[in-house]
Image (cartoon, rainbow, N blue to C red; front, side):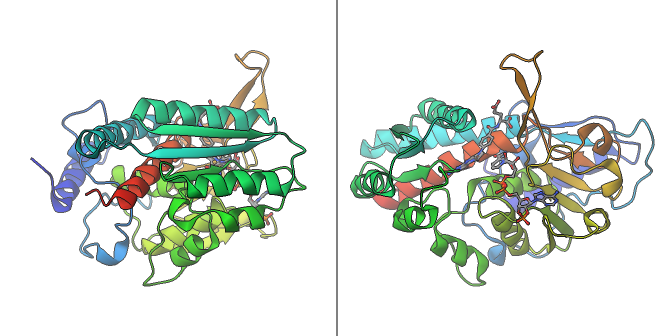
Length: 366
Ligand SMILES: NC(=O)C1=CN([C@@H]2O[C@H](COP(=O)(O)OP(=O)(O)OC[C@H]3O[C@@H](n4cnc5c(N)ncnc54)[C@H](OP(=O)(O)O)[C@@H]3O)[C@@H](O)[C@H]2O)C=CC1
Ligand SMILES: Nc1nc(=O)c2c([nH]1)NC[C@@H]1CN(c3ccc(C(=O)N[C@@H](CCC(=O)O)C(=O)O)cc3)C=[N+]21
């Protein structure tokens, strides 16, 4: 039976009541593993389902705005990996349905310039995820010292290729390249990253709808919604204002009717501003920037930061750490995303979701 949004919300409330008023212990907000948890299994992807068309009498999980802070207190852990796995499963089913009905599959093209190890890893992960979902992937690799024209040529080939529905230019590009010029050329209909200025402008303007919502911000919102956490009317602070994360996240939170403040490198007393927030999204790229005392007790913390820290004890000689001091935050927040295993896997799931949406649009496939 398909579950309606109101049924999902009732389930979310039931889940909240089940937790009772006791001091929360570590809960894993998990989707794929638990068949009895319909809130997390049933909602459709946010996609273009933006708040204008949402019911206003929402009864989603209203996280505690004040709660006792004690040594034992541990926030619920928002398990991005499980939530992303659940979404990936649904994408695979949709890809199969498309293939069986019209004999077509979605296609994603990636342009990777240079030898950055982190970029190579991210691109490899994206290609692997495509394979798992049955999405066709193509990759063009260019050397560090290539010219704008070589990137632009690769881009126009992919723009014209009908079997490619999504194009991703892996960022950052080497300094000498003109990112603006390159992103401007990317076909709006294939801009699955949502970085084209028209997509970003449409995201910012009321009454307009972007063709694609940037993947990481969309992943953050999905995590909140699928965990039954209310956004509407909440105070949100986004730390960071980059084009790929901070800015679109703040725009998207506004679309979901949060009151949003933005903290950046020039903000004075960032901890005072952050301390007032019900929802904190950290995307500064500074390890452990957000300390426990930056948070209001009961706040929800979404840690986007993915910072490599040298650690000879780890497999690749480094480990990933977030922008939030996890050990401190987990004692103050009501819910938190881990790094790794939080926002990162959602970014990839949203990329594939956008690529699927794009292919459906191109083939007029319902
Ligand atoms: N998990 C995922 O899927 C993804 C993770 N990331 C990670 O997110 C982090 C941010 O990435 P990205 O947005 O690309 O980074 P950028 O370097 O492009 O932007 C960083 C932003 O943070 C702000 N900032 C820097 N230092 C501080 C500080 N001390 N206090 C407050 N604000 C600060 C900067 O402010 P100003 O504008 O004033 O310079 C800037 O707006 C990185 O760790 C990155 O690896 C990124 C993309 C996806
Ligand atoms: N055009 C473009 N689009 C992007 O979306 C884009 C980009 N450029 N440049 C770099 C950032 C970074 N980014 C991540 C994606 C996945 C993980 C991810 O899967 N992280 C895993 C860990 C991965 C690992 O172990 O290395 C996790 O957090 O669990 C992280 C970061 C996308 N970005």
